[in-house]
Image 1 (cartoon, helix red, strand yellow):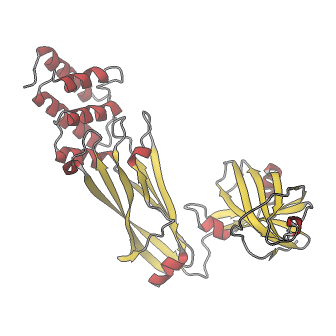
Image 2 (cartoon, helix red, strand yellow):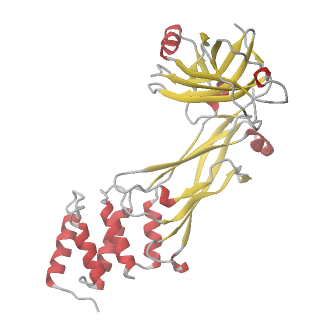
Image 3 (spheres, helix red, strand yellow):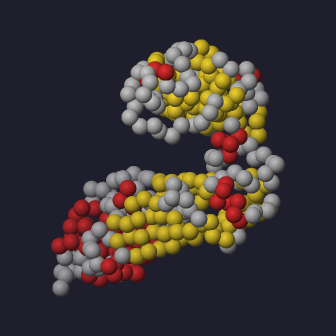
Length: 383
């Protein structure tokens, strides 16, 4: 039987009074260890602990009220001594990860991928990690199931999303490829996209299966799909902006190294590992570019990138390309509607092509024991 002392009752009264006065501070980081210790040692009665848990859960449910993470620690401390019911544990998990924000690129051009992002906020919980998993359960359009590709959004352990203290957000983002969407034969117009996420969680203080729960959260958004002949990304031409971007770009550490493809000299190999550091910014407007390397009249696709206005970017570019030699190259940035369409929110990009001429290369002979995937044959790019 737990002890019920006058001092503990007074302490509980003060805690409830503090929480009720509207300024959101009932238990500070300094005060919490003492309160939790009283729960653990039985210095507080069962009824007082249960009342405290009930009040904390109500506070957690009120999204307009300030939340102190140590209140989550108090709830979990009650669980460790067997004073948190399964229904309360389910309520605690449901409330800590709600609401979820689902963002889908809108409008979507039929033939482009469907870009989705699920943002998860875990601010209304304690400071400890949970044993569990968060993942995608299903995705459907107008009730028709869409397969989630293995490389798409799948989930991650809950233990990876709760850094101690402060506020954290987690994003699950990915795209459903166009060949998957083509199976649905979508017509131009509004379509309902339904995203179902599963939360599996078990409290860290027990291995009992009866406390392991699975909660499903369903979110639906109505998205406009447009015909394949229509564009969802607008090109804007502005010479002054283009000049500003051109002046902000640096290509560093451009290194070319031939890949051995046969018994002959490696230096004569037509396939070359190409690597470079791209530095851009800050951008005056949203950007989405394909990056090519050109020697002579032939240009080869190295990589793509995008960035939002006002941001800066440092990106490592790499690919295996055909028929590059130990000589300077022109680096060509071509506007890419396709790259922009693979983002959530970029709908207008700079339309000007940018050319950086005569970029020096470092030619390195390195033995390569395996042949990696390359980007294919050279592409023609106009001057």
